[in-house]
Length: 95
Image 1 (cartoon, rainbow, N blue to C red):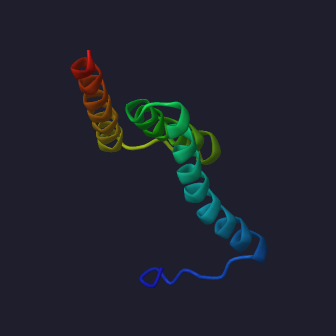
Image 2: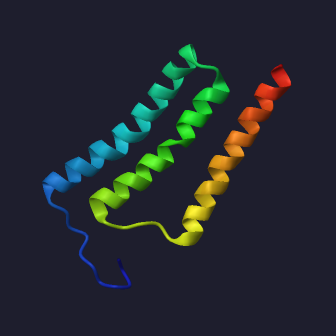
C-alpha cells in the first residue's frame, strides 16, 4: 500500500466485519476441531479439516469470481494427498 499510495481508511462497517471474521474464523475452527475429536479419531478429523480448503476455493470463486492459479491448485492437491496418505497409512497399520 505504501508503494502504490493506496488509502488505508476503512468504513466502520468494513472494519467491524474484518475484525469479527478474523477472530471468529480461527476461533470457531479450533473449537470445532477439539469438539470433533470427542467423536472422531484424529485421522478422520484431519481429513475433514483439510477439506475446508475446498470450501475456501468454492467461496472465493462464488464471492470474488477468482479461481486460483495452476501452481496454487497443484499445491493444494499435494497438501490434501499428503494428509490422505498419512491418514490411510495409519488405518492400514492398525489392521
